[in-house]
Amino acid sequence: AVYFGSTVDGAYTLGITANGTGDTTFVGAIGGTTGLGNITIDTNDLTATAITAGGTLDITHSGTGAITGIMADKGLTALVLTKAGAGTLTLSGINTYTGNTTISAGDVVISGTAKLGGGSYSGNIAIASGSTLSYASSANQTFSGVISGDGDLEKVTSATSTLTLSGTNTYTGGTSVSAGYLKSGSSSGASPPTSGPFGTATVTVASGAVLDLNGTTVGNAINLSGTGISSNGAIINSNASAATISGNITLAAHSSVGGSNAVTISGVISGAYNLTKVGSSTYTLSGTNTYSGDTTISAGTLKVTVNDALGTNGSGTVIASGATLDLANVTYSTTEAITNNGGTLSTSTGTSSYAGVMTLGADST
Image (cartoon, rainbow, N blue to C red):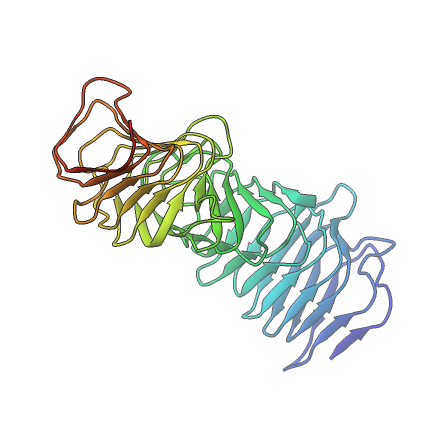
């Protein structure tokens, strides 16, 4: 084992190799008074506090790893973090380093109240195949640099924090949010995308989590579950500008979409589960959808512009009191059953027709 009981200073490089299953521990800060240059650490377990360096911080570890303090640049010379080895490296400081981050093996977890770049990190991030960058912090974070590689990125643990991705990202391993908010900071355009905030692969939204479109176009395929946070929708748009989902959506469980701003879903919605519209917003369905569960409009407006937008006719559509189903210049020939419980069936544009059976559950318009 290698043990440093005090501060390590000096404007030089540092190389440490712990043989076999040896561990490396830094009790005091690395570069506490004078920042170091390049640092190379090859060990089993790693424990460190604050690190200030100008150059590459190259960490290879097979066991647990924890850096609890702030990782910072040495003056105008950036710290560049490279993580290798099968272990998981946990960062729990409010880090300010500006260099790039590479995860070539193992995983990196940003935990507690930790941040990169003080909460707005513009460095590039590379995630190798089989590796994961997990954002588990309770602090809000924006990644604006390019995220690349075949690994995956996940937003976990904290139900209150927001992770915003705004780079022209190309990573292929997929994106998931199982707690809190995953927010789009840029548009991906085409579907499937070649780049965009969520890379090129599927975005998975677990029950209790939220995907915030933020006025952008998201072309990724989406696996959707649940009702979001406080039942306000697993998909929302926090931006006054209208948002679009051009990728296909698979309902992996009964799910709801909501918020207060407009969203168009032009991709195909599939799955054997129910879809519920909540919130005051207008959602426009312009895809030929194949989902077989019920459609419920609990609040706001669900606008339909093509036949079969409400899925198969195996179940039906329910309009709650105060909610609206807008058939916008569409000949809806599929015999979808509608139950109107005091809501509104309208035609906002053109002339529409409807072939299904309407049941009135209350006075309706």
